[in-house]
Figure 1 (cartoon, rainbow, N blue to C red):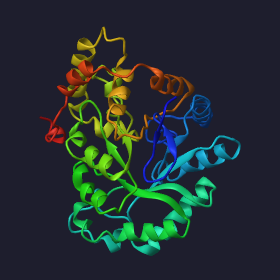
Figure 2: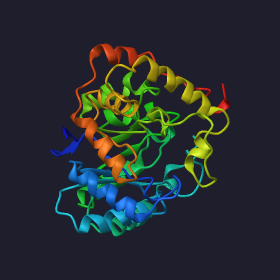
Figure 3: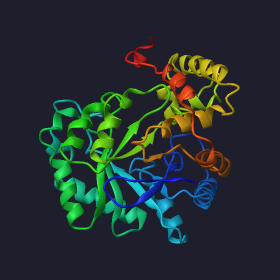
Length: 324
C-alpha cells in the first residue's frame, strides 16, 4: 500500500481508502459480519482511511466503525459527513445557509458524530452538500473553523454537489477548506480542468468518490439488472442509464483488454493518477472486495499512453437524467 499527503495536516493516508456507505445500508442486503470482515481485511492490507457519513444508515455505518476501531491498534483516520438541516437536496440557490447549517444544528450534529464514532475529536468533518449561493457568506465553514480551534475537528471541508463540483474552487482559494470529496472517474473528468489543479496549488486534500461510477465501471453489469426499491442504484440507474453506462464500459473493456488491468483496476488507477488526489474510496462491503481493491495500490502505474487513451472516454452527462 502506498501513502500520500493529506490536506493541510502533516499526516499521510493510504491511496486506497475504505468507502463505508454500503455497510450502513442502501446497497442491498448487508450483514454486520461481512462489514466487520471487510474492515479488518482492509486494515490488514494497509488501509488507514475510512469514509462514512451521518446519512449512511442513519448513523449505522459510523456506529459499526466506531465499535470496530475500539479493538484495533492501527492508527486510522475517519472522515464523516454532516448533512444540512431538512430541506431541498441539493440546496437551491434560494436556501439560506443560516437555516440549513446553523451553529446550533452543526454543533448538535457533530456531537452525534463524535458519539457514534466513540471519539473526542473528528479527524475530518465534511458538509455533505453545498450550493454556490453560499460562497460569499460561508458562515457554516467559519463555524467549523471555530470548532477546529476548539479541538473538536482536525480538518474540515465539503463533499461537492455532483451537478456543480466547481463551486468549491473559490473556497479553496479563500482558504476555507482543508479537504474536499469529489467525483472523479473515467467518465467524470471535469475536475481535471481546474478543481484538481487548484487543489494542488492550495494544498487541499482530495478524496475521490464514485471511482467505479456506482459500479458500472467495474464491468460487472450487463445492463438489464434491477435493484430493490431501497437500493440507491434503483434511482441512479433509472430508465436507460445503466444500459448506456454498460455500453460505454464495454468499449473501454474492449480497448484495454490486453493492457494487463481488469476494469476495476483500470478505474481505480485512473482515479489515483492525478497528483492532487490524496485517496480514492471505493465502496467495500466484504473481504473479497477489500482484498481486490487494496491490491490495486501495488500494481504498476498507468502509462502515459493508457492515460491519454482513457481521457478520450470522458463523458459529458449534462443530459444524464434526461435519458439522452
